[in-house]
Every structure is written in structure tokens, then in C-alpha cells.
Amino acid sequence: MAKSDAAVEAAEEAAPDLWAAITPETIWTGRTGRGVKVAIVDSGIDTNHPALKGKVKESVEAVIENGRVTFKPSTSGDAAGHGTACAGIITEIAPDAELYSIKVLGANASGSGEMFVAGLDYAVRQRMHVINLSLGTTKPDYYKPLGDLLHRAYHAGCIVVAAANNLPQPSYPSILTSSLVSVVKREGGDPFNFGYRYGNVIELVAPGVQVRTTWPGGGYRQLTGNSFACPCIAGIIALIKEAYPDLTPFQIKTILYAIAQRNQLKIEQEVEGPA
Amino acid sequence: MAKNNDSFEARLKAAVSAVDVANSLTAPLANSIENLLRITARAVGSDQASVLVRDGNQGGLRFLVALGDVQEKLMQVRIPPGKGIAGLVFSTGQPIAVADVSKEGSFWSDADKHTGFKTVTLLATPLRAGEEIVGVLEFVNRPGHPPYEPFSPEEMDMAAYFADAIAILVDAHETAGLLENFFQRSLDTAFDPDRDRDGRDDVRQWLEDVRSAPEHRDLLQLAISLRDIASRGDAERQLCQDILDALVRWTEKRSITDVGYFSL
Image (tube, rainbow over the protein chains, first blue to last red):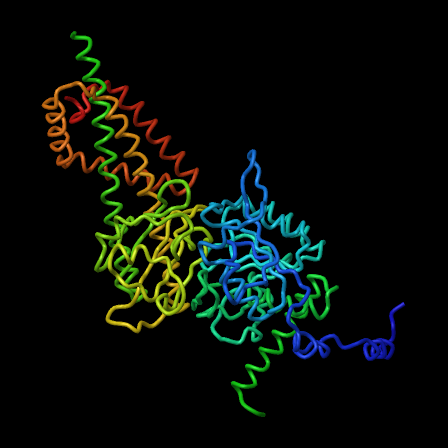
């Protein structure tokens, strides 16, 4: 038997208003990402960089032994710079997040798709709260293994954030949108002013143009690319997870969507001016 | 003795005809890449542009084509695996623009040290042919003098579109290069190193004459066209195969034994 309109209204009034409850104040103001484990599957991290010292809790790298990819403690740092750049963006937003470097690219790891998949698998098995993937593959062979892994990540409560391909070709896993948070770059300096494009394959847009971030050797670079929009969202998720550690990936995406709608509304109001 | 001479002649024919085709494949492709790179560089707003390709199996890179002030020196530079922005783009598959590499911190500048060039701002985009990354398209600085405007997201997108076309040519060039190596080895095997140099010089002169024959160029053009059609998919490849099979059967029926300039 259907409830009467009055009963529905009464139930709605009694229930907490999720959308009203989601504000920057409730989600990230005063948060630093403390206690949140963030994996960066990339080219390694320069752990001696002054801005990253003490923040990287573990560094491992992919090696092939007996024909299988395994992970061993890494001391080779980051010859390429990509992982260090991503780490800098995350710590700028969530300075107390615990970083875990999973190296699958670089001089000692040639960056095969097999290593990439193994790196994500390692992160899921380690129950990382947030997994940053500023890389991808266009090989359809990896569609299914990555899809299977993302399902496992979803059920394990790991939130995977992936950079979209900058090129006019789909890349995996970023197009597997239902199981992860996919990000494309846009201009703008405020990491919290991100957008949501529900209905598009790549759902989130975040600052990724001339982002100043850490670079191996103790320096900084101003970099442009989807690779650098992705850690921006990973950092924000770290703040949300600190505030609400038990949130599921689905709930996290809902919150990002709500905040992005608010951001969009704010932009429209600024453009249109006061009513 | 006569038998040995016949055998040598047969091996020589096979080897020189093969080498001739291979050498003629890479040059026009390299020219096409350079021409397209020039157009791309203009569109993106840079006059120092280059195409880098895989160097060995460990992820290293070398310059295939370069435009600008130091192009000759660049051709000698080898980039180790994972090094430099180009190495990074090659391994991550993601394009990257760097606003000013000279401002802060470290930069893998061995290329600059070797060439004497000063990289300030750069844009690098992966070259993808099908599912494979076959190289990197890189633009450095702007025309004129620093400070240079950093490359914009729109220019990054523009480079990505041109990269698709360049990647197809690069892939074809690299395939042709492999064929060249293969045929060169065939040639080396065919020639007995103890044979007198005069004999080989004669053969090389003969090769030059063959290359300059207009009908030979026509055949090469036909080969390139067939390759283009065949590369479009399995159905097209099968069609080419069927046509060639039919042609072979037809020629056999006509009992043509002399194939023109391939006869010595």
C-alpha cells in the first residue's frame, strides 16, 4: 500500500537533508587527511624532497621474478618526476595524508601494462583508502583485468581516482567510470573549485593547468596535464575520508557531485551577478 | 665452379632486390614526418619541434626528426629510460606541458648540455599507433626571445590531434626500419666477405641504376599504396592478398619468365 503524500512529506522532513549537510565546513574545513592512506601508482616519489619528507610511509617497486611481477622495497626514488609531482599536489591539499609509493614506471620498471595492473592490485590488497592513477593504457587487453580489479577495489572500500586520457582515444581505467572517479583538467588555481559532468565518460573536472608542484631534486615545476588534475581530487577525497572514514566509494562520489553542483552554482551567480 | 657461380648469382639477385625496396621505404616516410612536423609546429606556436622514437627495448628514446637551431646535434642525443619530460610522457602515456623548466629545481638537461640550447618551456605528447606508444612529439620554446608564454591546454589538444597523424607515419617508418635491418643482414649473408671488393662495387652501381629507373619508382608507389590499404583492417588486408594471389595466378598462366629489370 502506497504511503500518502502527507506521510512521504513527514518522512522527508524527519530525514536528514544530505545535500544541505554537505558543505565545505562539514567536509574539509580543518581537515588535513590525517590517518588516510593514499597510494600513488606511478614513477616513484622523491622521499628526500623537503615538501615530502616524512610523508611517504612506504615505497615499493615492481620487479619481475620468475616471470611474475612482485613488489620489493624501493630506494630508487623517482627518476622521471611524475609520481613526485602527483605527491606534491596531494600533500598540498591533505598535508597529513600517509603516502604510499607504488612504482610501476621508470628506469627500473619499464612501465608495462602488466606492472600497472599489478601495482593497482597491490594497492587494493593493501587496503589503501585512496588510490591515485595518473596514468593509463589504451590496450583493450587490460579492459577486463582492470575492470575486475576496480570491482574488487569498490567492494574493499578503496576509492580509485584516475586521470583521463588527454588524447582523443579512450584509455583504461579512466573510462570505467562507474567503478572509479575519473578526472580531466581545467584552468584555475583553487583545487576545491572542481566541477562534475554527470553523463560524460570523464565525470570530474579539476585544476590541471600550470599547477606548481614538487619535482625530484628538491625543486618545483609548473605542470599542465590531466595527470595533475587527478591528484587534486585524490587529495580532496583524503580530507573527506578523514571526516567520514566509513564512507563507501559510492557515497564519496555523491559528495563530490553535491559539492561540484554548489561550485557550479557559485560560478553562475558570479557571472550573472546579484539578483 | 659453374654451379657455385649460379648459386652466388641467385643469392645476389634475391638480396639486392630486397635491399633496394627497403632503402626506398624509409626516406619518403621520414620526409613526410618532417613536413607534417613543420605544419604541426606552426599550429602549436613553436619552431623547435622534434619526434622521438623508441631506442632499444628498455624505454630509451632517440630523435628521429628534429626542427630548429640544433637539429643536427639533437640527432646524436640518446635519452635513457624514464629520463626527461619526453621519457616521462613515453612511459605514462600522458601529455605534459612544463611552464618554465629553468626556474626551479632540477631538469634532465643532458640534451641541452650536448646541444648548447636552453630549454625554457615545453610541451610533450605521446605518439600512439593503435594500442602502442611509438614515440613522443615534443615542442620547445616559442619563436623570439624569453620569457615565453607557456603552452596552453588548447595547444596541448592541437598537438594531440596532429600526434595521431604523425604516429601513423612514425609507426610505418619504424616498421620499414626493421625491414631495412633484416634485409641488410640478408645482404651481409649473401655476400661472401672474402670476395673481391670490385665485384660488390659493380653490384652497388647496378643498384643505383635500378633505383633511378622510373618504372621501379612506380612499383614502389604501388607497394606503398598496397601497404596503406592493407593497414586499414583485416578485410582490406585479405582483399589485397586475394588480388595479389589472383595476379600471380594470371601471370603464371601467361608464363612470363622475364620480370624486367629484376633480371641481371
